[in-house]
Image 1 (cartoon, rainbow, N blue to C red):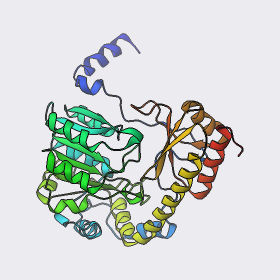
Image 2 (tube, rainbow, N blue to C red):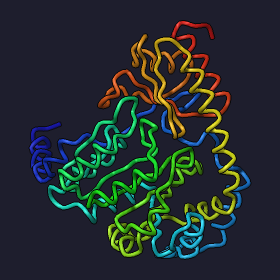
Image 3 (cartoon, rainbow, N blue to C red):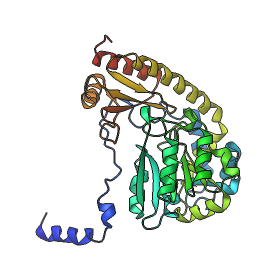
Image 4 (cartoon, one colour):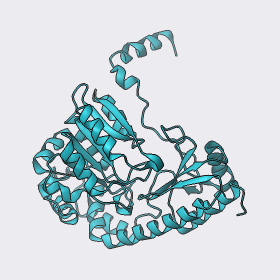
Length: 368
């Protein structure tokens, strides 16, 4: 790069907020692998007949026109599905967009966001982008939620937002609905209850929406429903709060194909329920098998993944051997706070689970 180009870059960078420049970007580089178990995706693709139904539905619509500004029939179907009011339902380009919108309309300079630590890193990144201050609260032993400490911290720091990711990514920890209600009653914060994995376990906070206007519940179709490639998320809130959050969403944020896929998925939700049942059963088998291996600690999970702590063999060595020797890609989370020597394993199909069991047995000294 020429000296002129270097000076130009520096000149441009000085206009970027220092807090943003100091943050690491949210990125993921995944090497190819026969078994991709690193992003908590559904183990099976959306059924072929349902894909055909989606495309048939899309084919009846005008592609040269924008979709509805507010897809009323879909929000009504979502409201019926979740047991909430249509005016309190927002749809987004994945739940990530709705996280961004909720933070955008609440955070001012130096506003405090309190969240468990570790949790989904996008909350920390967006808090910094919006000029807020992020306060992480460690889990108790065994990655159990410390709701008392979370509430005390939110009270002490006068948190504007309290994030409760339940089941939590990356630990799989879940809260009871009673704990979420305590957070609403005992703090003044907007409580963002991120339920991206709740289909796999834990209690939903949705029933609390009827009595608490400071609650926002987020759902995604990326995990249990299996539409990660199409990006569809849902926010549920009091209608007056939802109206304000909607101001931070981009117009026409969800495309025709994704809207149609969400309609079809809702109409065939019985298939999703059966797939979730299979994943939960596979998770419990994997938990039992890995928990029996010496030198490996496995943490209980209410999500579609497990976290293991490698005590007898370094986590990075295990990660490399899984990929190179067995063709299994998991998530190396060992660089995160309180996650030393930890890996996260998505629960896949039955053959994936068997392969993971065999690989870990071989690595930790048994026989495959």
